[in-house]
Image 1 (cartoon, rainbow, N blue to C red):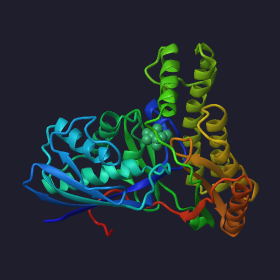
Image 2: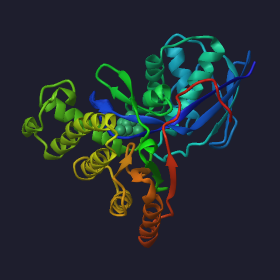
Image 3: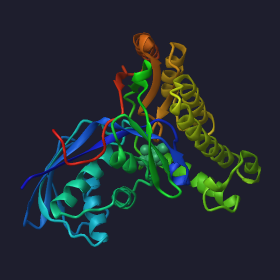
Length: 363
Ligand code: GLA
C-alpha cells in the first residue's frame, strides 16, 4: 500500500526569533507543500529520491547523526528521532516532491520533516499528538542536521488551517487559531521572494540565540519571556546582547497587538506593526540585509500598509499587506527598485493561509 502525505511551508506573519525565547509568534501555513509518497517494504533501508536534489539516497534504519548530509539529512533525522522515541521505522521506497524553495525562509525544511514524519507514522498506524510530532521533527533538525532552530516552523506546518493564523505561545506550547482573511477586507497578502538564499546551520542564527541566552542569564531568568519590561535590560552586561533582547521583548508585544488588531480587521494597524517589526529586526536584532530593507521600504513607500522580512533572516522573503488597488503599483515599484540596485528580479505572489499537514493530498 502506498502512503501519500504532505505538509506545507509557512509564513510567519510576526514574532521572529521569539520561539526559542519562550515567546509568541503568529504564523500561517502556506498553500505550497512538500509531498511524500512511501511504499513500505521489508528491506532494511529507506531509499529516498527527491525533486530537491540527486538521488536516490539510501538511509539505514539505524542511522546516526553525521551519516547523511544535504536534503536527505532531514529525512534521516526523522528516522533517527523516531527510533530514539522507541518507534522502529519500516524500510521501503520514498519519493519526495516539493513546491517550496530551499532557503527561501518559508520552512522547506519543516515541511519536509513533517511530511516524512506523517508518512512514516501513517504507514505504522501510529497516532501521535501534533505537539509531540513537532518536537520530534525539531529534534531531527537540531540534533541530526545540526541547525539550532526553535519550534515555530514545525508547529505552523502541523497546525495550519485555511483562513487562519496561529497564535503560538512557546512557553506552554499552545496553538490558538486566529482568523486571518485580509482579502475579505480588500487587502492582499503579498509574498515577495528576494531570491537571496540563507542557511540556518550557519553561525548567525546560533549567534543570535546565544545572545538571547546570555541576556537571560545576566537577568537571572530562565527565558526572556520572564522579563516584563525593557527597562530591566540595563542589567544586561553586553550592549549588543541588550539590543537583541530588546527586539525579543518588543516583538512579543507586537505579536499580541497584531492579534488584537486582526480581531477588528484593522489591517492598517497590523501593517504598522509589521513595519515596526522589520525596523526592530534591522536595528536591534540585525538579521535583515540591505536587499531586504530595500524591498520592505519600497513596498511601504509605494502604498503597502506595512512590510517585513519573514523567517530566520539574512535572505528569503518579505511580506506586505497591500490594498487591492495598490498591488500592481507596489509590485512594479519593488521590481524596479531591486533591478536598479542590481539585485535579482524578485518573485512576487499574492498568497493566503492554507491547510496543515495531512494525508489528503495531490502532488
Ligand atoms: C527559523 C527557525 C525558527 C524561528 C525563525 C525565526 O525559521 O527555524 O525556529 O526561530 O527562524 O523566527
